[in-house]
Image (cartoon, rainbow, N blue to C red):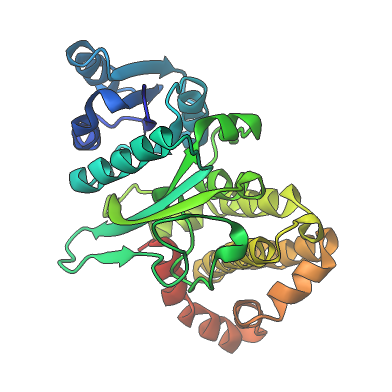
Length: 338
């Protein structure tokens, strides 16, 4: 049985993809590694097939035309046969000791005839040139060593939200939600994490520093200059998340509060990127985004707009924008862009 299917979306990743693959291989026959070559123009496909020939019972390769990160995740999910599903970006990696602990937990759950919808673990910012690595954990928020539900969670800090790095979903649950990420769009990892949440019933938190999130490549999508150039995609993803659910219909109060706070962070990031660009047309896009939220869900708009982040993002005038820019450091801590 394959306990976890690991999807590795790859685009021109020949120089660094080996680290991601090699970090998962110690899982042996318990894991499935799906290398998704998203129309690369270098030796990514060749290297992927070399791995497949060496580890045919563990690795499968999907070669597809270029569709972007989200489309590669879609392909990974559609090809997944493991009970649980995890995305590992090709420039990131996982910790071997933590991998063994996670697999041991999933084996035990299977023996006990238990299943969960979402497994959460910690992640570490592996930022180039920084010796002290920041680790995001959830010890103060989530129960440990037990299966729990949304009503059992505590209060998340601003830098503690559940990201793609920290989540492993049950494969069948993901497929039942009919999750389909947009093609040729960056920042869809937010949709990947956010959309399935109301379908999650049973959760488990394992306090291990599993995922290693590398930051430092110039062309990385979370590089500030890159984010400014792709502000339309950031706003598109934020609007897509606004459109997904009527918050009043989310049954769990704690889940509803969490999802509204997640939207507040997305609104903050989009606003900061617009402000940092210093371009009048982007400031207009920021204004239009807030209007969009107001029209779609007035109650959620009030909560976000007049919360601390919302007020900071909307102080009028040049001096207001300077104050808003100070919140940039908070947003950096939330999603780790540089």
